[in-house]
Every structure is written in C-alpha cells, then in structure tokens.
Amino acid sequence: MKKRNFVLLFIFVHILFIAFQINKQGQLVKLSYEKQCLEARKKKLLTEKQELTNQIYALQNHTEVKKYALQKGMRPVKLSQIKRLK
Image (tube, rainbow, N blue to C red; front, side, top):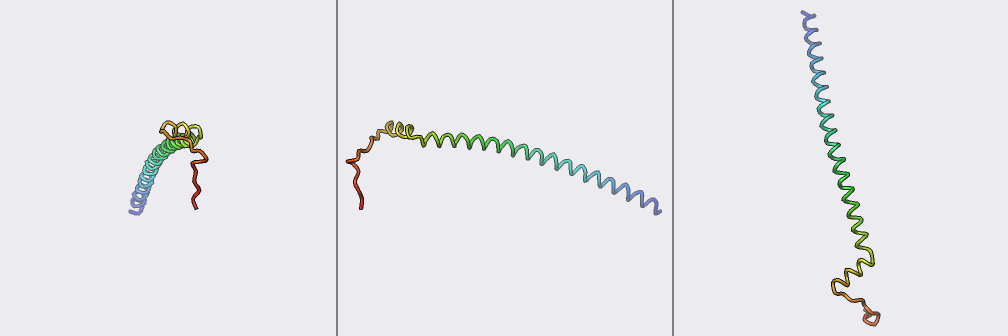
C-alpha cells in the first residue's frame, strides 16, 4: 500500500511540475509579446518627439517668426513708437 501511495504521489508531483512549466512558458511568451509592443510604442514616441522638437526649433527661428509676422500683416516697431511705462 505504501509503495502505491508513493508512486501516485510521485506521478502527481511530476504532473504538477509539468503544469507549472507550461504556465511559466505561457507567461514568458505573454511578457515577451508585451515587451515587443512597448518597444515599438517607445520607438514611435521617440520619432514623434524628434519631429516635435524639430518643429519647435523651426518655429523659434527668427527668420521664420519675422516671415510669419509679415504674412499676418504686422509691421516692425520703430524706436519712436515705444513708450516707457512707470
């Protein structure tokens, strides 16, 4: 009887280990896929950040600002037009 219980326990423990191994592999695949998605998103966001940074530098360019102001009908301010506030 003891030998039979030992064999059943032995088989049960091995089946349990196999189930844990399958679960571990499933989680590994799931996390690997999630990591791959996050890396792709990170790459996309870095590209978007670079494009926005380039736009900021282009908008801060003095010649571009002057050209935009002239297109909107603004005129340069003369020194005689400036009033001092106290």
